[in-house]
Image (cartoon, rainbow, N blue to C red):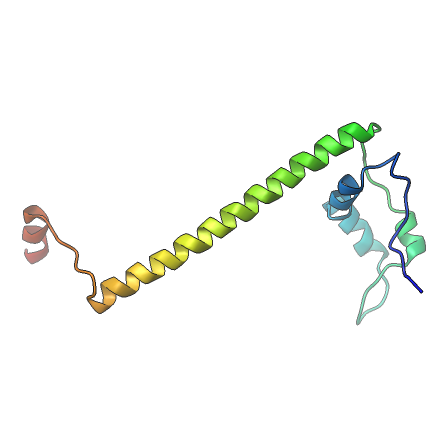
Length: 116
């Protein structure tokens, strides 16, 4: 026995576009308004079937929107990976500086200011 979230005609809506719509603030807000239960709030399949969202009529346009969103998600993930990499490098460099493994050479003007 399988549970389905929803079924739809793929000739009327692009699956990737639908995925991004389900993640949207608009659909999230509808699910919060419809959710029942205090310990584990949930919505029923009948409630989900009544959810509405804006969508371009053309499946091609939906695909274009989904492709742009997918590219943005990929760029965000690459950026997060770079940030994590540079954070690790920074932490390693800071550790090297604090333990004295790496010394910072000061020029004459900076030494004079540091001593003064």
